[in-house]
Image: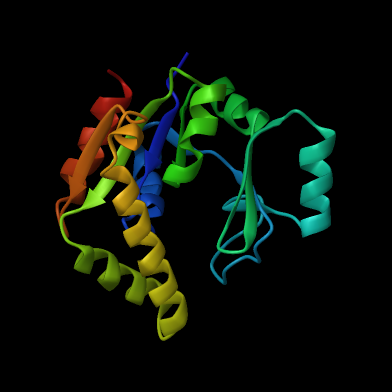
Amino acid sequence: MAPLLVISGPSGIGKTYLVEQLKEHGFLPVLMTTTRPPRPNEVPGVDYEFLERGEYDRATEETADFFMNNEFFGHKYGIRRSAIERIWELGKVPVLAIYIQVVGQVIQAYPAAKRVYLVPAHVSLLQKRLRLRNGSDEPETSYRLEKAKEELALIRDLRYQALYDSIITVQDDGNESLIQCLIEFAHR
């Protein structure tokens, strides 16, 4: 069976971008379920399974399919076992882009998952990327940057470091070498 690759890191580190690039190399993103509204460029059923809050709560209570269930930035997020199994049935490598706060739930469900945490070479990298992503929404950018700093403080703790197989520093460039590193890491 193909491994499950878990990529964690603070908001703005480039998790979504990396997952998109890995698709060209036999990886597929795991479809997550969320209660947040779709962003303008997101396609329901492709980028996320979008559910109303009540629908989401019923789905997580009525089925054992969800192994991860948490709340970030005021919205619920979950992952179904069936979403991972569908990717394995296709002979591909499932990849999850998640925050540090839920990696323990993944480890409980999939202890053999390959887990990598991405840290920025400089916090200014996150600030730049978040500003590009959020445009003129300065409150959203500031909020996500503060949360990113909190998450980076967590990964300095050895208890959190122990949750990961590898911690990789991300530069502002060099995405090709990072993608190659992730491919090799997943297949070790």
